[in-house]
Amino acid sequence: MPHFIIDCSNCVLESHSEAHINESVYLVAKETGLFDASDIKVRVNPYNNYTVGNKKEAFIHVFSHIMQGRTSEQKANLSRQVVTKLTELFPHITNIAMNVSDFEKATYCKRAML
Image (cartoon, rainbow, N blue to C red; front, side):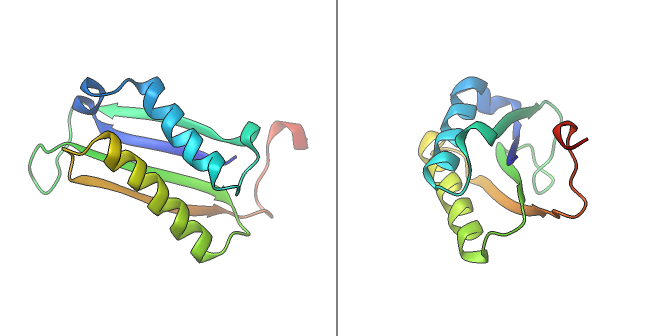
């Protein structure tokens, strides 16, 4: 944890590879100092079929899932930094956004905890 899941239109990959996008978001997340570098997970889900406002416009949306405990200001800053980086990489895409959701510690489980 954390997880950064990047949904995007498939045309996004014409400008940059999945590996480059993953690395770019990973570095931003790491540089915030909010997470252990070895815990950050990033992946890209490109879509062939989608609509944005009932049109086929390019989009990027990052769904971030992090362990609870960060402030609203920290989460807002994380979103701003990731969206800023993606805007630098994709200046021609107007639909770039991100949201941050918290994992609840009480209900979180992973294999290492068994």
